[in-house]
Length: 410
Image: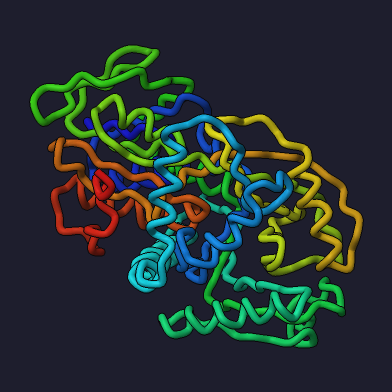
């Protein structure tokens, strides 16, 4: 029996691909399926997001933003040894060399995941709003557009299609934009989904293949013997295991600590506001360049998502950050008023170098780690699930996982 810990996009994708291969699978989730950061995020599948979070520009900009509670990247000051260690590692990773090495890794993961999304969208009875309309990054200032142009050049050099457009070209792609924006960068290969429908729908498919879903069940610890885990201890009893998949998102670090593993993660809170979508659109996903917010059409709704708030495992809603997203919207879109259906927040697991943890720690023969996907968890969910299944079957993974090894900071 393989126990998957975590019912978000990564855990559910892992359970699906394991069950499809005929493994006995039990997924354990302390809340409901897709109740965490898989529920209300922007739903973007983005090969264009192949530049890691740890990059020189992020560090320079982040230092200016850190003390502003309404900025796109905010770190709440607090006494935390883990946070200090994470920030020091993040600083060391913010180099051009790291970016150069990381882009091909994230690019290949993203492309493989996009291919798997196309396959999943063709499954009978699984409908989750998959569309490949591309993503348009828009900028209201000339300085912002110049930054976007530079980033597009970096991505194009890595084989990612990016088309720089002026104001007229951006408005032709998305008429809902204000006419006074400076321009944008269009990434035609990107796609989007409605994330909660995807995760919950795939969980039902996994159940149909024999996977057992235990929701409302919290993992308390593990029984170990030698180099193996023998039992997963939960609030609803003990589960004997052959293998364990740790895919608990922002909570993975604490669970790993109980196994004697150092898995540096910081929980990064993101927010979204889901509104009724007016007839005027937008009709394609947008990235609001200067404010780092995303706009995603999802059926009859429109989701505004953004911000990166490092405040620990804290799920309170900071109303100032929600207000900052709302104020950003009329700077880019002609429509100024939207009917709100839901305000949401969730925690994304961020590694110091901006790369996920995928692989087997050397200390255990039967543990697979799959976490740390930061803001691209939905984007990389299917490929991570497929890689987990390959690792569980003791096969050579489809991609080189050496740069993603869980103990790389040990």
